[in-house]
Picture 1 (cartoon, rainbow, N blue to C red):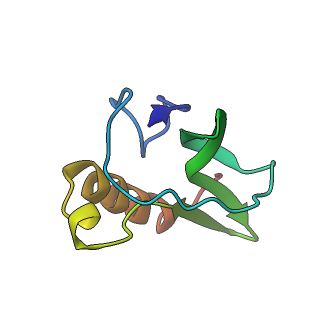
Picture 2 (cartoon, helix red, strand yellow):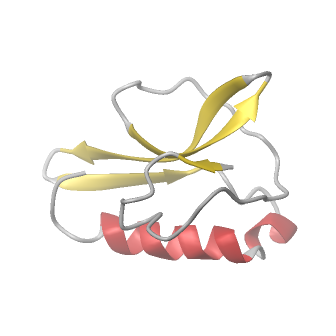
Length: 92
């Protein structure tokens, strides 16, 4: 995975990392703030992103498709940071 937004509180201090997980590709709104991406058929696709929703915040993480994937340290780190970030008032 590539960290696209290394200054964001969710990805701060992270660099490129490897994970073992199922690639789950969706159409996505190009206005989201992509934090991490992965290559799929040669194209970078979002794996983690944020956006504003009204007065709230949304964090999306495409990782975590099975128990093995959820037990990876990077998954837990992104999930915890993303949840804390989404629960804090402010701009996406």
